[in-house]
Length: 473
Image (tube, rainbow, N blue to C red; front, side, top):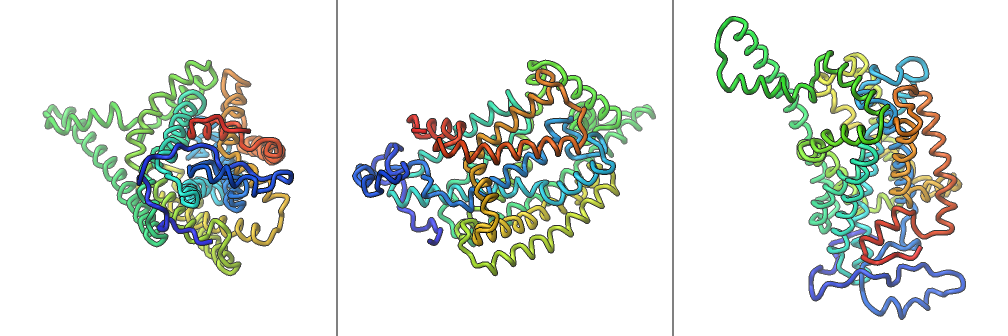
């Protein structure tokens, strides 16, 4: 079935339709689908996607991305944030620790977030298609869904873990809706353009930092020589030294101070951790969103919408098409990641290297590798191979929000001072063992849960809030 929203009925014509449960209850053996016809005919309204309507390929891919995200986030749970981008600072970088970092960098880092972001966009295409089939308006439901996701993300980020990505997705989601009627080609083109905008942003940061450093050096030299700097130079110097340097390019003394402070805070009590994370989150969710987060996530979401309309995520393309995706994705992307890993180590993971263009290897290479992952999953779904695994991944994907929040609750309890206090004590090899344990647990529990309930607990809450009605479990 072609996935093209250009045929969607106009929205906003006539009175708004309340989003109530209609034909979203699955038919069961003792209740023929025909019995639901009178209910479906009662009114047309947007409703949650039913088990029959869900695409197993999308759920499987989402499950893979969700588990892969934990493989990267675990470092942010167990160590200060600086160790996430620079393994030389914490978590170990010898022997098995180095191998685990290398594998994660090749396979998971930014690739899983890329897939997850693309599927967020694909979800809008699915929602629009389901609403169009019911003759329902989607606008109100969509924006309530996004705004409640924003609320959940804010609670998660400020009260549970500051590595939250839900707020970013919700922020982008507020801008995504008007793009839904564009053709696949237009969506992919705009997505690529948004990705390319990141090039001047990254390089601009690098130029700005070097410029501020030169101004600071000039002002200091003038003061030492008894000269009076210009008012503009002095203000720029104060802005850099007092504020921006700590965030963008801290000196070794500042880095050590920040590291020690993070270790102490996260090994302490809950109130101290919440207070510490709040300042950084305000900056990240405002300036960070405008200056980079928006274009990264939005570009992936738009690409996901285009690919969904082309039938890529629904496993509708030919086997040859997906084989080509795998060949190109891994054949081009993985070598880029190997080069990137080598250059990162050679430049000691310094931010100057990244802001001078080193960031682009993974920024664009991750997208290529992600397409290889997509092709591989689609081949598995089409062939029915490893059904025991893809079925479990699909269950994890159907409960993605619940499983994602579970990651945060379990891991912060393990590592933070108000829990087991393991922060800064487990190397990358040990962290990988924790990840594997959580993977196994969620692959086992998610299918069992969904045998008894329609939604994961967080999905149930999200849907109930979205549709202003308690959803049957």
